Image 1 (tube, rainbow over the protein chains, first blue to last red):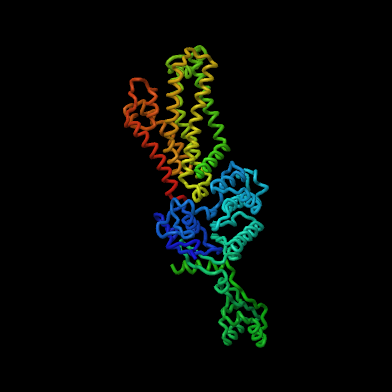
Image 2 (cartoon, chains in turn red, cyan):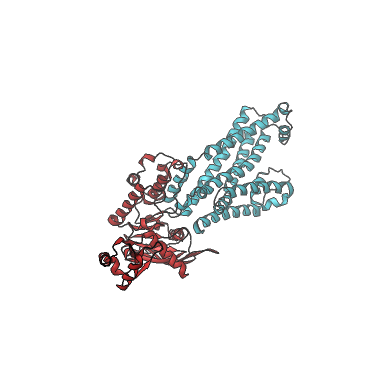
Amino acid sequence: MTDVIFTEKLTKHYKDVQAVTEVNLNIKQGEIYGFLGLNGAGKTTTIRMLMGMIRPTGGSAYLFGKKVKPGVSKLWNSVGHMVEIPFAYPELTVQENLRIFYRLRLLKDPLLLTTVVEKLDLGKYLNTRVKNLSLGNAQRLGLAKAMIHRPDLLILDEPANGLDPAGIVQIREQLLDLAENHGVTIFISSHILGEISRFASRIGIIHEGRMIRESEVDQLDSSRHRSLQINTLDNSKALPLLKEHGYNTRVLPGGILESTHKKAISQPEKVSALLVSHGLPPKLIAVDEEDLEHYFLRIIQTEDQKS
Amino acid sequence: MKRLQAALWVEFLKVRRTKILPVSFFFFMFIGVMMGMLLFLSMHPELASHSSTISMKTSFLGGSDWNAFYELLIQIILTVGVIGFGFITSWSFGREFSDRAIKDLLALPVSRTTLVISKFLVLFVWSILLGITVLLTAMGTGLLIQIPGWSPAALYPFIGKYMVCVFLNALIITPVALVASIGRGYMLPISFVILILIITQLIFVGLPGLSFWFPWAIPSLYSRVAGEAIPAPGIISYLLFLITILAGLFGTLFWWRYADHK
């Protein structure tokens, strides 16, 4: 089956800035792909190239098997997008802004307008001028413009910006529903791994314009650092004892002991029993799991050290 | 056609809801009335005897009859045409960049080319209507103040010449659109319009020979507003005028289609 999104060494270099370098993507139908990176990593530039808004200096992008290039207007019938902070015509109302895209997308079913307004809770604001909307509602309008024509592919650049927690959950559930029940492919950029990992099926991490990691979300757990943290009444005696029994252990700056030994992490009760049997009952024994943001930063730092 | 219709509907909605639309018509109505008032002062010099500025302005008029009024209206539409039509063009194209709405217009079933053409069509009609507004309000004011020497025989050639001047000025907005697109906002095209106006005036005053090579001077040359001593523009001048319009049009289309929209 043809990839919905396929890029081959997609590159954008400006005079003195290498914004994106040889990014390869292949995203299948129904996938939710989380595109992660810090600010300025190259996420928006990649999205703009996917949408034909800027031309690559190298490589190519394909959507539904068709090369993205000037003049491929029909291709955009199947794609909905929201790039960066959503802007709309400020002196027009929410309804008028939506009608603009209803017309420009050549839609003929007024139900599409009603449905998207309901889905994004914009009913109350239909007659509000956009310049008077809150950031969160402007974001909802941006999403409504992207989703009004029920596209097969949604390309969203940081859609959670400006939304309150309830809004984030609502949008997340809608995106999940679109992918799982309607086969919509979703390409979503973010700089928050914790958020994206809740509903993406696959993630790619971009740093300084290069893809540095791609993995299934299910595999994230096994990639994250885990350790067993131990504190006893006398850590100076506990340390050699643990080492003697084969548990790799070190002293953390606060004096607490940390073991990254697999057996220690999977069977902390055995470590506890060992310490108790030698008169060193633990005051603290807990498996510590690296959180997603630390994992994300570690990957990036590792990359920085390499270069 | 369906796509152009959709784009025109959208462009019309945007224009209809902006304050610039009524402001532009009020401004052009004001100009029409003011021209009538200027001729009224020329008819009654005693009213302006205390103001040397007004007296000086009325002294430029070649008389106080309808023929002088027609000449005045041609002169004024040549100037306010460049400013007014240039200004609405700067707004129409510049606002897409200033409001950052452009990025939502670049990946749609309606092509960028269609969007740009619809903008030009709406601007052209808008400009023509503004030109007619000055004409109607000025003529109304002229009738109200009872300018002497009314002659239907002179009216029709004047209207013909006036409308050609409006038409020519409405066509040469395309380079302003290109400057607005490259400059990504209002400031650069508005500065460009002012510069064009200054250059046109300077050429006419200081280097009249150059005016035949300056596209924005062609409507003035066509109107013979500078007097019969300066010859009418030749084929090369009209060709340069046409090339400028086409360069603006295709430059804008090319820019929207191929430039990087960051």
